[in-house]
Image 1 (cartoon, one colour):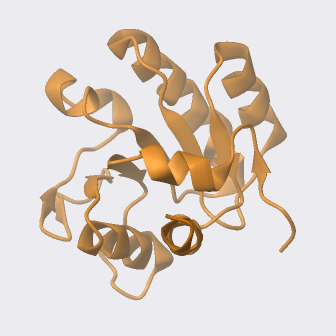
Image 2: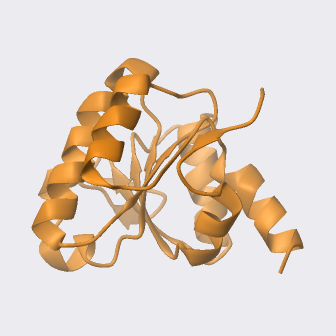
Length: 148
């Protein structure tokens, strides 16, 4: 699979993340978009599902898109984990930039394993936002946990 593309170290990012907004979180327990966030939730992370077709995913209230996160919820988010096709990453990156401006904080943009997009990287670089692409949070969690 190669080395993940990153503006920051995935392992270092994982050590600072406590709350994750999971864009594209799935209700289907057989999909990575459900398995990975559920795993992270089981391991102490707060996971906020972002899915326009769900009211709830793994027992958490779901929001239709990033920009609909209430201010108090968005303020707690550290990272935005994306489970959408690579072609959608620029649109999600633009929303992360907008949310970052609204909240006055720098979110870590994290595209799941297999997802990468140069345009999204340019958008995030221009906004000064850290990102990780083509890396699984579950796998990186295991690496980060072993280095504590």
